[in-house]
Amino acid sequence: MHVKYFPDFYKKNMKRIYAFFYFRCSGKKEISEDLTSEVFIKALNAFESYDPAVSESAWIYMIAKNHFINYLEKKKYDVSLEDVAMILPDETHSAESIAQKFDSGRLMHAIQKLSVEDRELVKLKFLEGWAYDDIAILQNKTAGSLRVQAHRALKALKILLKQK
Amino acid sequence: MDFKTRYQLWKLKQMAQPSRIFAKTLEKELRTRMGHGTWWVFLKSESRRIAIATMSGILLIGGGTGVYAYTSDNVMPDHPLYVLRTAIENVEMATSFKAERKVYIQRKQELRHQQDIERMKNRK
Image (cartoon, rainbow over all chains, first blue to last red; front, side, top):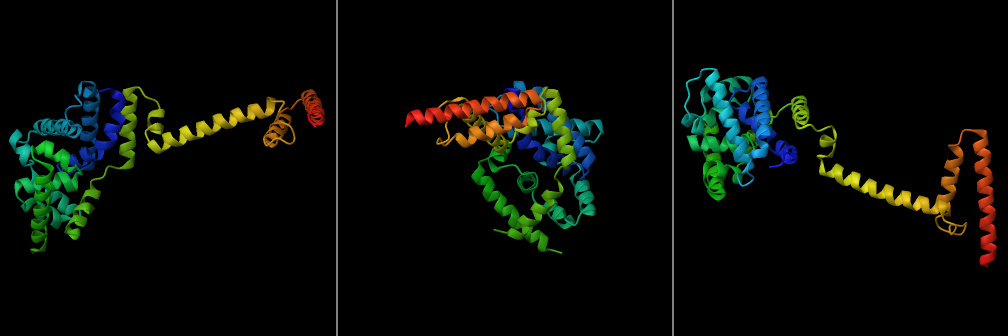
């Protein structure tokens, strides 16, 4: 795609990618900023070869995910691709770090207690701000089924939050 | 619809917002790499583009009307655009700083006003 469309692409996806790293880096802003910058520079360099037939969100999400895997490998965390796909590495540590930092600790702990699929959906939809259509492409599901799943996940979250 | 849970999630999401300074710095870096100047940032807003297009249109129409009002012999004291012509003449006088230039412009305008009176008389 022509690079003249990159500004709109950047504007649309910047906050999501930042949130993607934020919730995976224990809420550390500096690391999140560095990783976000690196991802968008990579995206800019590869933008000319980007095929518009592929979803924009899916494309940038894959770049971010792969970049995060490389980052963790450099830090020598023991993680596999499957782990990152469905279960974010060091999630318990991330939840505890954010929980200690902010008053939303209970919420983060409750999210951690959800099933893997529900947790991922809640993070993508409600914390990172992806649209159902984008998530449907990422997870190979339909937007309708994701809406139903999100509704159930929120119900489960509500019950978990009520528990002491 | 569980508003309370959604609201708590929304609050948590707000914590993950990038700072303005970071967003602007990254934007500038990407702009530099793209080889774009400040116009990319200024014009990326659609409302700004519409405002600039509208102002340009108004300036073009206003400018064309002003040129017509000043140069046309048809614009006489009873013409709607005469006010515009008078305003342009006043600006012309005000922006001439040399005494010789002021005298020249004053004579030119007086001559033109006399010609206007003649034309109006002949028209009747």
